[in-house]
Image (cartoon, rainbow, N blue to C red; front, top):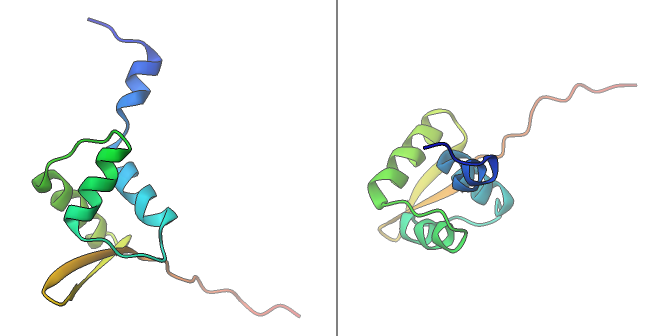
Length: 88
């Protein structure tokens, strides 16, 4: 059964949603559980396994960094400063 464009777009892309959440909050790091809660509040319902697969893929691509702090794994947007040549 066909669906409308609005319904199609309302489902969203989970990878883009995770990356957007981390990018807009690049000054914060989140545990997987905290990300699940934030994403659920935005209407994106993922289970923990799906989220970890997305985070692992983003980490392999260099878009997300993870670090263990006090026994918990935190994820943060990997904002890399690009090379900017000096211009006179």
